Length: 261
Image (cartoon, rainbow, N blue to C red):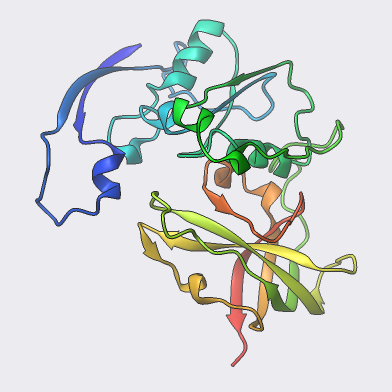
C-alpha cells in the first residue's frame, strides 16, 4: 500500500451546484492508502470474472473513483481484495445500493453465474427509503454466458426506429450523470440481424448535471441508430440508470444516431 494525501469537499458540494469559488465549508484533508499490485505496481482493477462480487454505492466508490476528488485505488473494494488475497468483481452505483446495483447484475447475460459470494454494502438511508427501491429484480437464469466484452465485438446493428415509450430523469436526481431507457418500434433493420419485436435503447440524458442532447427525445421521434449491446459496455455498470419502460435484460446503446426531420 502507498499512503497518499488528498483533499476535497466531497460529492455533496457538487450536488449543491455552488458558483465557482463559493464554498460553505473548508476542504477536508486526509491520507488514503492506495492499493497496488506488489509485482507489477499497477492499480487495482475490478475483474468481472472473479468469484466474489461486491455491490455498493458512493461509499464504495469514494476513494476508488478519482473523479470524486478523494484519490483512486484506495476504496473499500481495493482493500477488500487485498485482505481476501483474491480477485474481486465490483458494481458500485452512487445512490444505487438498493435497486440499481441489482438491475446492473440483471443486465449481465451471465447474471450471478460463476459467483460464490456476494458482499453487499448498503447505506442506512436505503434501508429506510422508498419501498419501490426494494422491488424484486429478476435475474437471468444461471448459464455459462460470457461476461461483458469477453467475446470480442459483435456484428454491427443499424436500425430505423420510432420511440413509443420514454423514461425521464426525476427532478430530485442528485448525481452528475444518468442514462435513460426508451422503448422503440423497429421500422426497418438497416444492417445486421434482429429478432422481431420492440427494442430498448439507453441514452445519455444527464452529463455533468446538465441535460444531454438526447434528453429532449420524445414519443414519436424517429431515429436511425447504430447500436451495440449494453452487455458489451462493462464501463456503464457503475452508471445511474432510469427505466420506466420495463426493458428487462436486453438493452442497446447507440454509438451513432441521426434523428429524422
